[in-house]
Amino acid sequence: MTQYNSHNERIKRRYFTYLKEASRYSEATVDQVSQALARFEADTGYRDFRTFQPEVAVAFKRHLAIHASAQTRRALSKATLHSTLAHLKRFFHWLAGQPGYRARLSYSDADYFNLTAKEARIATARREKPFPTLEQVRHVISSMPTANDIDQRNRALVAFTLLTGARDSAIASMKLKHIDLVEGKVHQDAREVATKFSKTFTTFLFPVGDDIPQIVTDWVNHLRGHLLWGNDDPLFPATSMTVGESGGFEAAGLKRAHWTSAAPIRGIFREAFTRAGLPYFNPHSLRNTLVQLGEQLCRTPEDFKAWSQNLGHEGVLTTFRSYGAVGNNRQGEIIRGLGQSLPAEPLIVEQTVAAVLRRLGVTSRPG
View 1 (cartoon, rainbow, N blue to C red):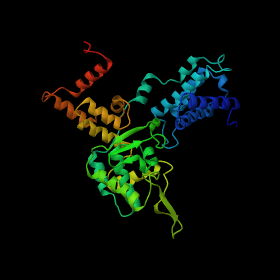
View 2: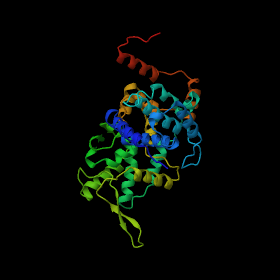
View 3: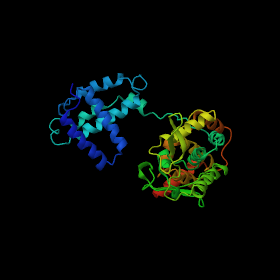
View 4: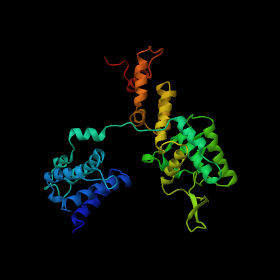
């Protein structure tokens, strides 16, 4: 059975180049697009894209809706359906404008990949994400062993994640020169650190307790003073592996090299939370922990703007939309509390609105 179509392969290569070079998509995103197109081609028997008809998209949507996930053996989630069809819609919209396809396709053909309005709402609904409390993370850190270099690295890594809210991919690529213990800050230089969207920004250590920075300070001093590592060496080095007496691989200290991916960092978190008797929370969830702390500590719009910037967000709204959702229990506490007493000073929301209006040059709030 044919497993590819030569005409399709050529136009797909052009589209992938367009995504990377013109739309500036990452390799990971292009891979997702490639997977969506591969799924569509396999379902339609690798027919030429030039023979596309709206009925084909409709039939594909039906098949996709009942397709079982290879991992869960259940029907694909609405979110997976939405992302797959969105990739296909954008592709066929682009395809309708390409030479050799303009006469055969129309831009409106791509709309047949839309989900129903109800399905789209389900797919894009924001759901409360679980994340640890500050006390839980501190408990995990205090429960971690420190018997050897690997143990000390692991504890310092969790402490550093709490102090900075840095993403695991950024942490895996950081060097000793990127942390300034005197100023209490980390320079996330996108030329060397794998930051999201390759943004360069400075993070000052969040106020999560004086004992947490000391753990990271001790680790950095151990690397520089005891192991004699320099600025270009990794802040959190990979584990050196050797063949043990049993013939299997065993950890043998630290390797003077970066991890090749962030997967080991997630493994360290999983082991640390399990050891502490808590459910596993991934490194990224600590960003939610820090946003929750910021909501408690920040008193002015400027305070929260600085807090948001410290997480690498260009706008405060990004912090609110992505991490600032109020949990159900806390939501109930706030609503019940608002009816018990009037605020003694202007609400932070009013201050935020006023600050935005001033930035826009509006002298008074519209009625």
